Length: 180
Image 1: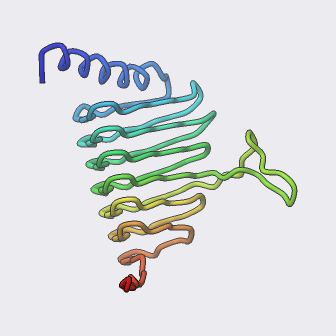
Image 2: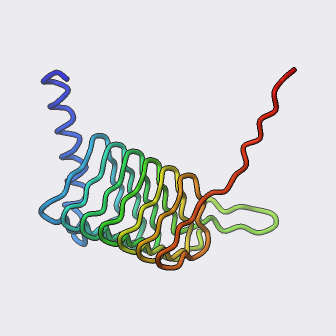
C-alpha cells in the first residue's frame, strides 16, 4: 500500500472516530481498534459506549437513531461487514465475538394489512450476553435476549430469546439432484 493510500485510510478512521467524539453522550475506552471504512451515524441525542479492548474490523456500520443506546462492553470483537442498527437499545456483553456480516436490528417497520410505513417503527431492545460467539451472517431481530456463553451458528436468524449456555444451529438439508 502506498503512502497516499495509508494517509487516506488514516483520515477516514479519524473522521469515523470524530463522529463518536463529537457526540456528547458517547464514550470510547482507551484501547479501541477500528478497521478501514467503518461508518458511524449517531443522532445527537443517542449514546454509544465502547469498552476497553473493543476491536472493529473493516466496513462495520453503526446507525443510532434519536435517543438510541448502543453498549459494547470490554473486548467485543466484530469482524468485517457487521452492522448495528439501533432505534432503542442494543447491548453486547464482554468477550463476545461476531463473525463476518452479523446484523442487529432493534426495530421493525410498522405495518398493517394495507401499508408498510417507511418512517414509523416498532422497537424493542436487544441484549447479547458475555462470552458469546455469533457466526458469520447471523441476524438478530428486535426484542431478543441472548444469554451468556452462547454460540449462534452461521446464517441463523434469531427472533426468540436464547437461554444461557446454548448452541443454536441453522439446520438445513442439502439436497443434490444430478442432471441426467
